[in-house]
Length: 112
Length: 114
Image (cartoon, rainbow over all chains, first blue to last red; front, side):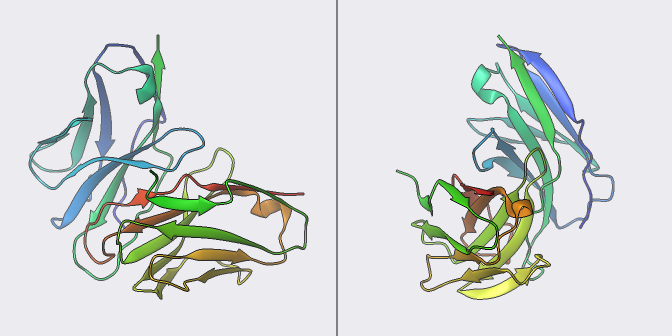
């Protein structure tokens, strides 16, 4: 599986916009970029995913570099509820069975 | 209402005993998974099932045995429990396994082995 690199931790203040970076220099053309987040004592929660185009939903905006070697999850106006570990994961499309593998992710702390 | 039900939420067992962790999903999904998370460690993939068939096993020990009695069930039997088995076990599901499908997770079973 291609690898992703994320900072171990980041800190933000409530109300700010947070940019969570993810590097995936060896990404393949058929790999999707997925973001999940996990709060303590709960299972991971899907945030968003994309292939080439930037995507947006009610939770976040995913900005994907034109060469696809990096992406940034943008969380507008973070609240205390956004404090979680954010995982950037690559997943191949339609090449047999595939599993999601989680790394350490980025631990986001939100200060009141 | 939760769509993936894991039971029990908390479980305490003694070393050497056997326990079964229950997972039921009501999302109509065809693929189910088990993950394990030990204290302050990343989520670790264990098993994947597709249409009730084992697709991948990343667990070294045969003490961990998934059991799929129904399409929407994937229980996890753990025998000869050890203190190192203490962790939170998460069940997950997706519509299919072969495509880039989104995973949905249950709230986990926290197992403590004394």
